[in-house]
Length: 134
Image 1 (tube, one colour):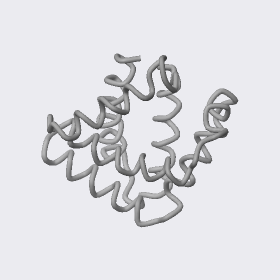
Image 2 (cartoon, one colour):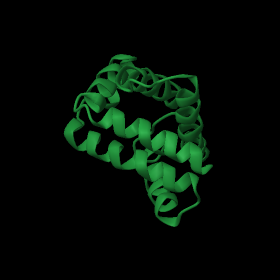
Image 3 (tube, helix red, strand yellow):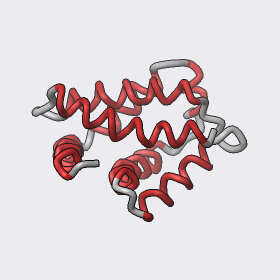
């Protein structure tokens, strides 16, 4: 990631995280998006899940920059989501991304096409890694 993209992403994420409803609203939208997703989350501790996602969003930036800490985090998440563990199918990540973008748009008052593109690029790198290890 270019320095400008990292800055745009981090600033947007910070604006979103200022509202405690950001991740709550994301998970409400995502879980309601399909029966399959709803089923995957039926026994999930959402408070813990939100903390993990918050950390993972920051780690994804580090992974995109090639930093070992971010890459190791991404490897662990990919392993936990593969077919032998949580069995998160590759097509579910597209829904995840669209729900995330909709939520960012709602919570980032400066949201525009440039911010959307940075979020998509940042997330797609992680999604591609995750699905390659499915």
